[in-house]
Image (cartoon, rainbow, N blue to C red; front, side):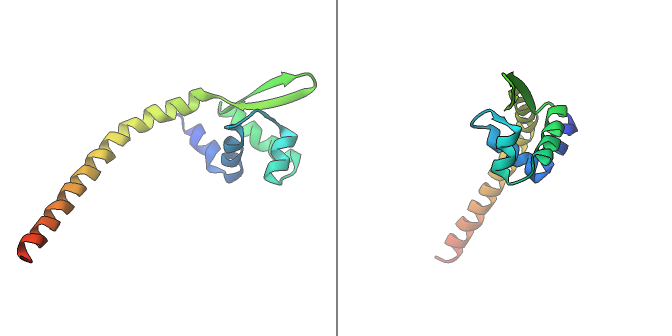
Length: 110
């Protein structure tokens, strides 16, 4: 798993940009306005996301629209799926253990 994705998403404004881009393609100005930051700040965050492969740019006339790339998130999902199985097993074991404790309490209280 490429750690640049985690680094890019660790900054709150960049994570918010990703959330904004879930629904539509946006220009730097639109992103800056929605986040309440200046356009140069938005551009800087977009550059980091672009370098990490999280977003791509589409030129439409004199406007540059940013959109999310699915591939990094699909790779992240694949990587996390390994750990989901481990956590599912651990949570199932915990649930079984708690049920045994409840059953013991029920039998000792009778």
